[in-house]
Amino acid sequence: MGSAGGGQTAAPSRHATQDPAPTHIRWRIAALLTLITSLTYIDRLNLSIAGKHIQDEFHFSTQTMGWILSGFVLGYAIFQVPGGWAGDRFGPRRLLTFAMVWWSIFTAVTAFVPQLPAPAWMSLPATFFVARFLIGVGEAAALPNSNKVIASWMGQTRRGLGNSIFLMGVGLGGTVSPALIAYLAEHYGWRVSFIVCGFLGLALAIAWHLYATNRPEEHPRVNAAELQIIQSARLDTGASSGSAGRTQSSNPPWRRILSNRSVWMLMLSYFCEGYPNYIYYTWFFLYLVRVRGLSVQQGGFWGAGPFLAVVLLAPLGGWLSDRAVSRWGRRRGRRTMIWVGMTASALLLASGAHAANTKLAILLLSGAMGFNIFATVTWWATCIDLTRNFSGSLSAMMNTWGNIGGWISPILTAYIATRWGWTQALDFAALITLAAPFLWIFVNADEDLEAHV
Image 1: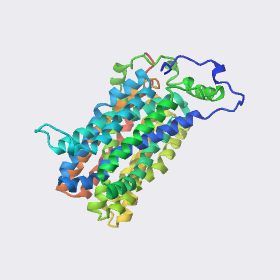
Image 2 (image 1 turned 180 degrees about the horizontal axis):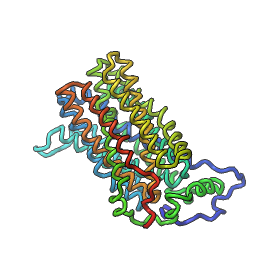
Image 3 (image 1 turned 90 degrees about the vertical axis):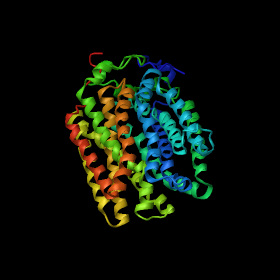
Image 4 (image 1 turned 135 degrees about the vertical axis):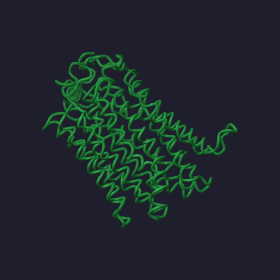
């Protein structure tokens, strides 16, 4: 594998072709990232959809299922920073390959949890929890390292769009998951759904390892024209220009990062993004079936609604975020997109919770999810704005907080729903959502965390 360093430049002859038109490898790399993100969301949604069959077979209570569902998020949150730092240190190609193999193995292992030998003191719910925790450990490296790839392969003016492409995978994975997992679970049993997902992950790991590189300079199919497009856009003036040539082996400026107000507000606000998001990843299918009275097949169909909204709104959010930066600058432009997206998401979430008509409620709740990811694109782009060379580490820190919110979400949602009702549980999620744009008053995307490194 080629060096992950940021300072080397390939000889022009290596990339020269007879056709002067630029190649399009950067978009194929982005498409692969979209597939990887799609897979991560199929795997994380798998249990929430197959959960009805598991809950019925083993007689788990709603709160027990809440704890099992939270296991993934805990592992995912704890290992964000190690995964992001390792990508900055060793390169995202190797990290993503290893991560996909890891989480795919433990996804398949989930099918055999009831048969696995376990200590007498470990209950069956605890064994399911551990399996989901280990899947989360593997998937923790996915988004920070995808963001690292975007930082290397896309220019300053396309950071929002680049992130929106791989975050579309949230929508694609979520759109496919309800119908696919529900079908497999109904016709072949819930165990088969986990085995199929495991094999899909291993196949994608092989494809990524064979095709991708850490940086465009290392890819044999990137010609000189495409390399020039990437480099001229990437080595810009402004926030990251002073550090564009540093080697990838440098350590992140942790003291500067951890003492920065914008970083802390970025992380705290992402907690408020993660809490409502994970309701869709954990409880939404069961909410449709048990609260709204849909059949499993209907739940599989309508459960895709929020994720279809993501497919439509994520690229729009990325494009508008970049346009807003072009017009108003990074600080005002990024902030405006967060305000628009998260305020719309909160209003739609509260409206959907109170809608009496089931189809109208699903449409409103779907829109809430779509606008959440519409805004999420800007969070990830801002990590690159603040530090391009160490965007893996910073985005991992941010995503840790989002997933702390996500870990709390299925547990607290189940508690509120059991004690006061599902409408109140969704109202609380809407209030958390509304806190995110307020915290962005204190985020300045114009800052350069590498200025004095």
